[in-house]
Image (cartoon, rainbow, N blue to C red; front, side, top):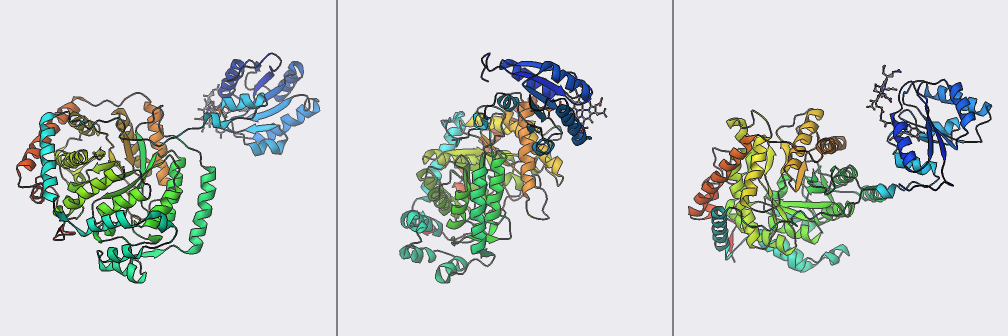
Length: 613
Ligand code: B12
């Protein structure tokens, strides 16, 4: 705050025109005193006449009147203004009102020089008194795009597990040698022949289209043959696109970066997931989330997208959860993002996994998502096919410089955390070998495993903390709990839902993880689409949680350490079994990384489609 010279020093009378409320004025007085002005603060509850006579006597440069109680405000202030006029003071000094009951419009209506509502900062008032324009920019949040993987070496911290992981990863790389799939061929075509600049100019490469459509399911093939879009989708109309453009221009011009974290370094980064089905609505949700401080957004595709061989094109909407992956949809989403927002396009689970990575890379995504174990045990893809495709996906992620998280959603199907973690670590080990940058994604959830075995009967802290502690004992890698945090602890009640999200976020922050994904407060409501207000509920709740705990921490009990040690031992046992199995694929089929009894069913999508290279 600048200190004024004696020539610039102002005399300010501070008046609480209120029975009691004067805290705001006391704060303002402190700011004015610090800046070198002369201040005089009257006590609350004085009659207006007495205040007017103080004004005559003191002849201040400015009178700052504060009003908090919302009753009879206009009448009270109008009478005060009349008395000031009658006393001949109106032109001799500045007369300003502010406080919880004030709005600038009221001040203008009643003839005061200015009016400041709730949330006005002390700096703003000091700037006003000094006749300076208030530079909001000086306090503006400055955001830059974070690199979640920057500080990690990917060294193993647990040698025996490290050796097992390397052995298994080598085994996988040997197993996929000489094998290919339609997804890999499409992905390589997309990589080699699909020139994004030419595509933006509307130039279609016929060689690409012909070769590509021959590798697609009939539904996707029909698009390239006759322009027919997937039956569940429709193209956005010209007037909708016009409105989207206008919406984006307007919203971007008003966007001010906001921050959810209370501390300087801004960890963990907070991601929201979008996938309303409609790209326009997605973009609106993204803009809202950015305005409320989200650091990153995750593109969710529809579940049928994972079961169809090949992508179609066009700017498409549909009425199911998840937004269709097409170059146009991704491109519009990218155009909507602020430059500091991290953008993840998830690939992880279906028949288009490697090509999703290529599209994500070409269209400027920052992150992707790959997990062979989850995709083949709980998301319907054949283990052999996804192993071949997964290795290619990791190579593409490395080529396009996309870190990828390895989500462990099979835990939601009932697979115990240690088995899901063994699968995740194998994929991370592959990533490490292939020059990729994996991010570990343990669930912060109330999983079927703990529902049945009771580890969360006492609290929601220990078992989640144990997961982070266990992973840190094994590998020096970034950790991004998700997805979203608090899964299965949220209910249809928006307050309850926001609350559990916020508490899980505070726990994640206490454990110093790198990022979190949060749900919207209607996460557990399946009676309709996600509404924007619910997104803001959880962003606001997380911000308040972060504000509440600050650098303080949520502390786990000693159970967390005990469970972390058990988890590490169990992970090692599972990895030994995988290493001793005829192959990783065989281990997936035979339940070593999650059995049918535990809720893991090897998928059938893409079975028998592996070809010899
Ligand atoms: C603290 C407080 C009190 C304290 C006041 C202590 C004091 N010396 O000020 C006490 C406990 C005494 C109190 C009592 C009452 N309170 Co009270 N109180 C609050 C409370 C919790 C916080 C207000 C506050 O200080 N905020 C912090 C300051 C810093 O914010 P601020 O005033 O907005 O000031 C900022 C800006 O507005 C601006 N600013 C302020 N003034 C000015 C002036 C100018 C010129 C400018 C430029 C800027 C500016 O700068 C400040 C810095 O950012 C609010 C509820 C809440 N959570 O907000 C209720 C609240 C204001 N109180 C309320 C009520 C009703 C009362 C009582 C009437 C309750 C009762 N029936 O007994 C009594 C008053 C009794 C009486 N004698 O009449 C209501 C008002 C509702 C309404 N519709 O008007 C509120 C909103 C709570 C509620 N929802 O019921 N209260």
